[in-house]
Length: 366
Length: 202
Image (tube, rainbow over all chains, first blue to last red; front, side, top):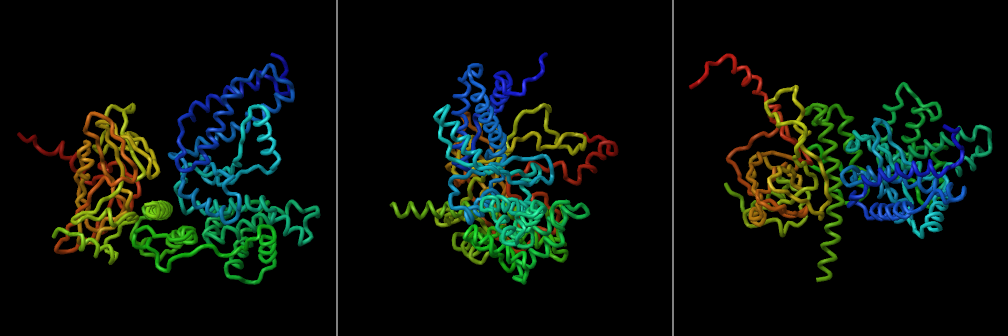
């Protein structure tokens, strides 16, 4: 056996592509009926794979081999996410909530598709996206150049634990992770660091991580109040992340934001957010005074603010040792009941919205 | 007492009877009944490596859910019921019944004519989507739209109230179909002990 060549060879590209075809076989009949954008991405990738399959890798130059390596790796990555994004796998109720959040902050939401990957790790909640926007531009260029394929969509990849994919208490963490995407898109943290004169100091990276976390905490609190802090304090208890700011300070800042107390950090983050996104950081949730959850029935949600409020209502009951439900049910039953009630409230909201929209438009037509 | 349209409406208005979502009250509410829709989640029975489903409560046996495949649809998609395959599904509607009203659930005649049959009773005070066991007893597969008005509920008022939550409930606040929890029945232990203690009856 010869020493491996450090360049991309036709043979190792053929191996990778054969692996890709194996995944493709499993995906061919996948259904993504919750999202036309996923269907569109799927179709585009299938066309690309079919065309690449006809390509003779041995006839490619070094540059062309490298281009095909980039394409194949990217298609592989997206397929890995599409596998878990089918109607049977993806928890589309929580995904729909996150899309509403994105709609608050992104004008060109139609260009983005949310894909999910289910992890076996219990604390795996993350948003992944291309940190370097030029990479996607390059991939689009290569698809057009070699195979005359137009790829219009950008992909946001969400990871969540497989066994907790219908856990709506823990799902509040995704609001925090989504905030990192918004921060990246608008460079909010960079703006804060710049204004505070911290951007070009030696410890800029350290400060950046701190402010990124503070921004994400406050961003999440807009939608889920203190619920994300409750989970955060559990996850970081006795095992603080060295790079992240202390949990105590993070929670304090969230409290300051929610209670509208004076805080220089909160104030700086609010100003930078407004300046970068042209949108204010403010409370974007509503809760009913007395929750229907206490009567074991789903809440009739009428607006997106109330939708985000569902997570708060569920946490309020879970956290309250004096709640009637706590007294009447075993903890495992209460956990199941709360998750069921949140899920049904969310799905009822989206279904009712769609039904009313269709019903009204049909009536007008008739 | 058998409840008529006005009585059912009154219960709905007073929020004694909860049905969420009630997408089209005008169409769903009949003179003596209320139509319920087919939900989005399904458990489809299939033949696995085990030779039989053991519902005797033997703890060493594999759980019953392994005999079913879970699948989801969105409202408006079709679901195919194959002949003689047990499909567990649920109502689209989450229901909470008053403490003095029970509900009888059957398939609408339009669907009975296609080979479906169901007859079940839901106890007073029940809350949750209702798990239903549907089998296509015909010879050909039948495609049904998710969200279609497949079921018909009739309501009966009792002279006195009951407390649904006074006893442990196996299927409380469910939003998707559940496999049988028969093996959790508490008298299984007693039943099994009778084998060695009672004389054989003729």
